[in-house]
Length: 324
Image 1: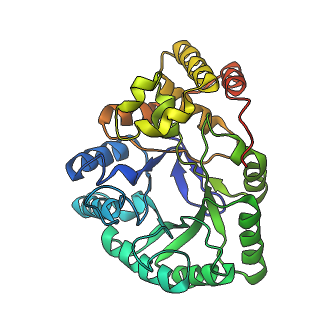
Image 2: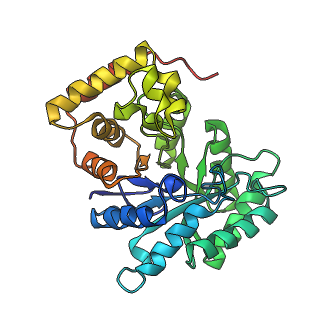
């Protein structure tokens, strides 16, 4: 599988980032192990998770995804080096009362907890899950500097940051010689383009910030399996895609179908391939709960779209209202 450098980090990551949000939620440990084994066999080396995954599932407390990844790493410790896997995790979302944000106290407590669950000595990419305006950027970045110096974290990234706040953080890192965010996780897909493309895309390309967008398949809508209101009653994410079932959404699906037919592919592969072809995108994040779904994600990295394919998809996905 082709690899790209993640921003200014020097990390060589595969052009697909596998989303670990499903581990311990819609994929139990046994299935998660099968997915991770198949992922590595395909040549993919980039896995994204977060301490909060999957706290939202009944009976979960958070940390389930990291725990499963850690057990999988231990299982393969004799046959696969830690360096062969790039692990990204995140901090900042609420884990419980007084357990959220980007304060020094919370980050220091959280990184050690993540390291224990992952069963590793270091995290390749440690990300601020969301901006925390209650904490000075200097405090957050200074804490990350100490973690990098201690060898617990190799690089840092941001998620859900506005262009203005990301630029402010990058400027502060440069002025004070602190670790800088080498990556950004924005929501980005054929259905949700305006929020990223308006300001974040030019900033990330100018400052060489790697982009690993989430919701790459718009919660599954771009797979093509949700085409009527009745379809939204199926699956754990069905209710999320209802907002896409409009004239624009159906136009996007029609374009995906047309391009997929040209390449003997399917909408999932085309939607991911469109993201990979986008200048500035390092690796879209996508998850899978079955080996068939994973196969589609891997095949997407091998699909080269033609310029007329991209133009058709761009036209079909135009007309999105600008974010408020």
